[in-house]
Image (tube, rainbow, N blue to C red; front, side, top):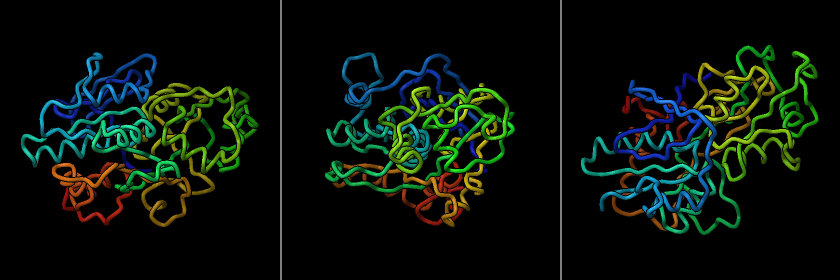
Length: 311
């Protein structure tokens, strides 16, 4: 398993929406702050209000002419925050604003030009072909359970049966005779879209599922419920949950690179028009040696070989 930390962090310069239920922990030794309670979904409208800086009580997205706004996937968001920190350290006076809201919200924000860069953790659909995707890294979707769960491996068919409702108790898989708590992402989530496409396919998710609005919320519930199962970005898996081998393959950087682990999706920056100025400079930084090394260090699979130069 990748040695990954929880990467949802709140910083002075990188502004993010405070989402209850999401645990935000420093990536580089900063203080930890936890937001407990019900997860509050950020709708497309809320994200657009936030990134446009309209008077709604949300954080302003643009505080200077040098601000670059990214909006969208809560899976990509914490990695974009780290990249933003590093870019700002090298570009004094530049401000990177990172907003969540989900992949669909980020795509809409890019299309409406409310954000210079949208973030998506799923491939673009046919009706989104007017936008330009830029793959910044690859990520595996990990199937997670509580560490005390005796189940040590699972198959794709079993995951499909659990999330479609065919399997409802752990005893059907050799575990305890207790109901399975199914945790899924919400509609509009890129993680959910990729999971539906690769695992559920034509099946509907069970109506018993509990829907959450972020990787952190899924992780939090599974970490506190010994009977829960969920799925999330492998780059955000930590010691509080257990990532199960799928079809005999442990999710890891190595198994993504050799194509043996199958639940893999791209992390995208999405643009309406060709990036210019500081936006182009930021994208070049992310795709360059330092940015790619950072993404590799934080648990993702870079699109370009890591050089060690960013460490």
